[in-house]
Amino acid sequence: MRITQGILTNSMLRNLNQSFNRLDAIQNQLATGKKITKPSDDPVVAMRGISFRGDLNNIEQYQRNIAEVNNFLDSTDVALDQATSALQRIRELTVNASNGVYTNDERKSIAAEINQLREQLIDVGNSKVAGKYIFNGTSTTSPPLDKTNPNNPAANINTNPLSIEVFDGVQLQVNANAQGLFGDNSATGGTNLFGDISALIDDLNNAAGTPGNSIDSYLAKLDANINNIVSTRADVGARKNRVELMEERLMTQEVFSTRILSDNEDADLERVITDLTTQESVHRAALGVGARIVQPSLLDFLR
Image 1 (cartoon, rainbow, N blue to C red):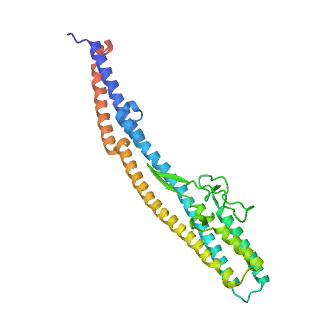
Image 2: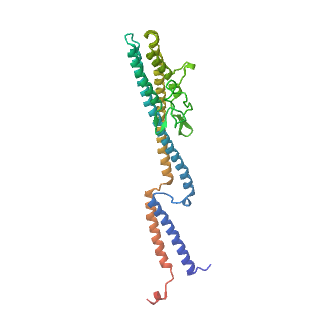
Image 3: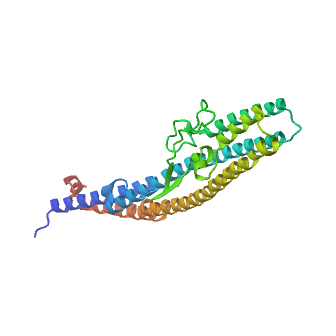
């Protein structure tokens, strides 16, 4: 095969173009800090990067969900603490009213204060966080307690548990059992918070019976309601502890996923700089060789 000047020139130009492409690829890696700038550079790296980014996006969403869970649980704990304080004050007033030296008017004054505490308990039951009612199950846009029905404000509580996903396949309930707290559970041997308080107010206003066989009987009922709230707070605290464990797990998973994404996509800058220096030397040599291959002109012979 006869090698002509045209063949040498075309080969030289093709090789120079390939050298330019390699130099451009290395310079892009150095400028972006990434192994690839488009999927065609390395389809395998690109596909794995999509998968790893999907994992990170899921983790970020779970972290946002956990923040919502914490808002609900913290708000629930605060509300239950306020309910406990109100009930303890009602119990204190009941103990005072059971004293035989109190007059009917004094008992009516106590009844008036207990009535205000009942209103406070309704407000606590209608607590909201970020515009959502925390004690009404999945009906977060509707108040669970109705102030216009003081004897049974919890008649329309939504009992469906509200759960939020905090990890792949892991759901955590964020609301307390409002029916168990505020509803009438006497048919099953449970508490009846507002029913007991309303009956106590009526007895104080009507001065029914004697302290020994009427007012005193409410102490055990109030104690049962207080214990019920304390038990619910303990359950909320247990769920809070689990949320903290899930937060730690997500943080660990985030670090791991970020590292493998970096290993997959980030360029080794030390190696890139070395490759760039080497490729620049190769390219300069190619340019020098190419200059010698180009056919001399007639002017070159006349010199």
